[in-house]
Image (cartoon, rainbow, N blue to C red; front, side, top):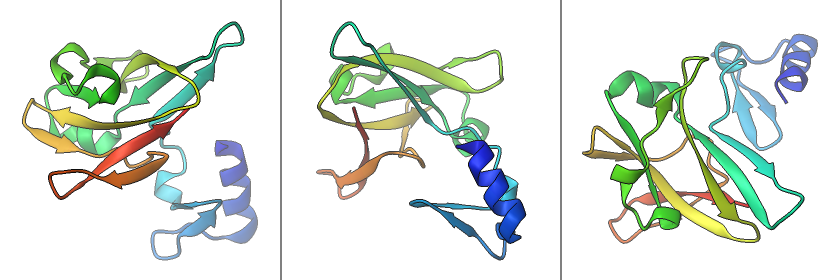
Length: 137
C-alpha cells in the first residue's frame, strides 16, 4: 500500500499538508506517507483465526508512558493486554481473533485515557457518548 501511495503522490503532486491526497478511503499527507498502519491482519489457512497486530499510532505513543489494548476480545480488561515496544520503535500487541466477526476496541493510555485507533476499520457509538474503534476480521 505504501508504494502505491508514494507513486500516486509523486505522479499527481498531491499530498502536501495543504493539499491532502485521497487514496481509497483514506487521506494522505506527504508528512504521513511512511507512517505505519495501526492494524496488521494475518489470516491463518489452517483454522478460522486472524492474528491481528494492533500498533499504537505515534501521537498516542508520544502522549503516554504505558499503552494498553481493551476490547470485546478481552472483556475490556486492558491490564492484561499491554503494548510492548517493538524492534522498529513502535508499540504493539498481537491478538488471535475468530474470523467472520467484528470487535470493538480502544487504546488505554497510562490506565486513564481511552483513545480510538486512527486507522480502525470503522467506528461505532458506545454507551459513554463516544465512539469505539472496530476491527473487522
